[in-house]
Length: 185
Image 1 (cartoon, rainbow, N blue to C red):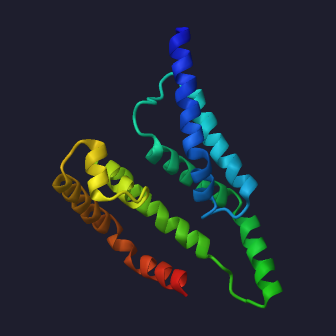
Image 2: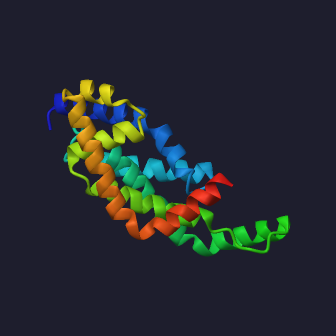
């Protein structure tokens, strides 16, 4: 590998790391309460990207890949530490007088997993438009300007994305409603 190519990869990696490390840690906190564990999970995702740096395409948007990777590693962590998490929940519930075991974070993780699964199944442009609108909170006009497409195309892509996600999540309607009720109460 040439020195110029190596330098470009290092700069691209650093830019990716600086832009996404903190948001990914915040995202991981939705599933895992320990900040140090969240940072370790996100760090490991970036180590994986670094190890694949020669084949990783830094020119393509990597946000979806990074969030999916962090999400999957959080689920793996929860799965691997399930007994410990359940025991900690039980101890906390007993101390607070709550006799039920709190599984809200597992239900939320399952639902968000299904959502990300659906998002990742969207066609690339459709997924990009959806993420920009729903996660980056960009308006349709801003997305159209950034991608060099018409606002009508953005609207069509969002309609397609929402229809696809509704179809993908139709079996989880009950879980979604349960999550919303618990979230709002």
